[in-house]
Image (cartoon, rainbow, N blue to C red; front, side, top):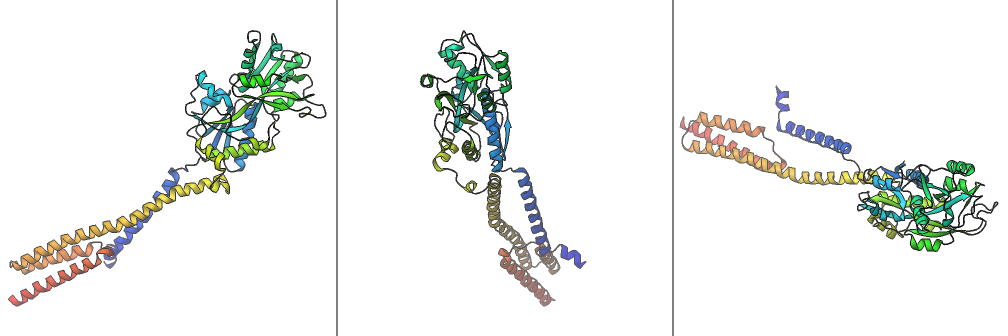
Length: 439
């Protein structure tokens, strides 16, 4: 019996209540950690264009650098730059490689209103390779020739069409786009003379460019009027390839050559999380440092030659560089620290609020219960003054005494509870004394 009374005592119920509250807090903590995900994404998707293209090769290098620094990266080949741009609104946390002219895609019916640029990350030269047995010194010499280029929507296809049209030979040249154009396809076409020339975009490191530069049956065109093309075609600039820069032993090129180039940009949907932006721009800098390039490694990334609005996080990076914990810690560590901050700070705030509200609530509840008991005592006192039977009054006091012993008394109302118990004791003594005197 004593054990049963102990299990229902106010102290026992208080311990049970505290244990239940602690258990509920633990459950909420773990449930929240399972449901609430870190705001910083754990992965980014790189939309690169066709496999084997310059952008795809560049994307593979970016992905390797990002993984090494703690951010998972997946390379997703697409049909073309147009396809990459269209997929930006479909794939979350995605970034696309594209030429600086991407802002003009709105003219082709592509919605670019929610796209931003993360900056220019390099130059993408445009090469015109042709069979070494042909005499081609200008674009006009391509008339009646079989000319191929990379797939529709790529920068090489876009600029090639503009070059052909600006030279007035668009009706004499059938430009044939080829999906997944490779060095093997070109070399076979040159050998079999089924292909006369090919427009290809890519840095010196591009497998197709490197293979064609070392292919004895192919030469490339120096754009002698490159400055004019740069003025007439938006987003196009010129780069100089000094004599012998590609192969000193074979002296390729045999004299200084002028190439055309697009500026390569990183393009994203404006919903891209800002924490990913510095990671991508650092990757751009790291990749450029170990690549052969026509420009100094420190030139890129930058905010020049953009036709889309510059992303705010990219603007901060170009002004301040890398900031915060990410400057010293891997991305995945920073991500989970951010997660803990995102989760723990609101939790601590809630605990502080509860620590203030719960005592106030308990105090209000205790005072409410005590006021009810005081009113009942007042009723007994008035009954005693009116001469009610002692047995009924004592029975009422016993009921009030039992009820008061069962309530939970917070520390803030202990003194009021002691006063009530003393009043109850005094009331009982007065009633018993009056009953003894009358008998």
